[in-house]
Image (cartoon, rainbow, N blue to C red; front, side, top):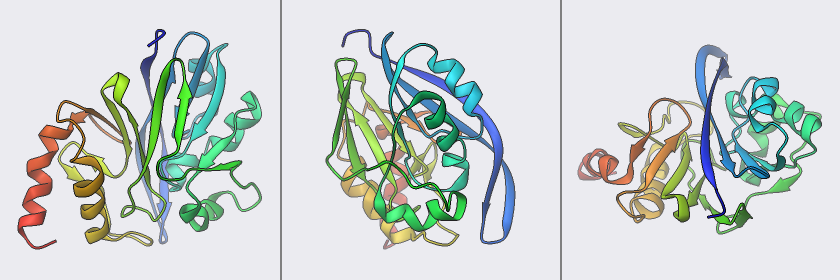
Length: 210
C-alpha cells in the first residue's frame, strides 16, 4: 500500500439550510502517504486542514455532498494547495447556495476511481441525504468514507430540502451493505462504525416497508 494511511481531523462551525443554523463538528479525512493525499470534506477550517496535509501534494478535495458544513473551506483549501475540488453534479444546486461564484473543478461519477499512494478510492453514488451524495470505498484500507449517508446508528438525516428517506435506504442497502462486513465506516460526523454493525439498523427500516 506504499504507506497509505487514514488521518482524522475534527473541525467546528455551523450548518445552515432551510432558514436554520446549527453548531456542528465535522470529520475531515485525509487519505494518502508521506508524499500525496486527498482530503475528504474540507469543513470549516482551511488553515487547519492545510496544516495537517503539510508538505504533501494534495491531489483532490473530495466533497461527499454539498451541504455547507462539508464544503465551506473547500475554495480556500484549493487556493492554498492548487488541488481540484470534486463534486457530484447532482449537488450543484446545494453547492451554489454556499459558493455562488466558484464552481467545483471536476465531477464525481459513480464508479470513478481515484488512485493515489498505491491505493484506489472508488466513488459510490449514494443519493438520499443529498441528490449528489457519494461515498468513497478504499478496499486496500478496509475503509468507507460515508459522508452523511451512513452513521454509527443508521442512515443520515433526510428531514430537510433535497433529501429523501426511501432513497437513502435504497442507497445504503444496494451500495453499502453489499460491502464486506468488516469495512470500517468513516463518517461525516461522530464515531466510526462498521458495515456489519449498521446492517441491523438499516434492516429495521426495511422491515417497516421502506
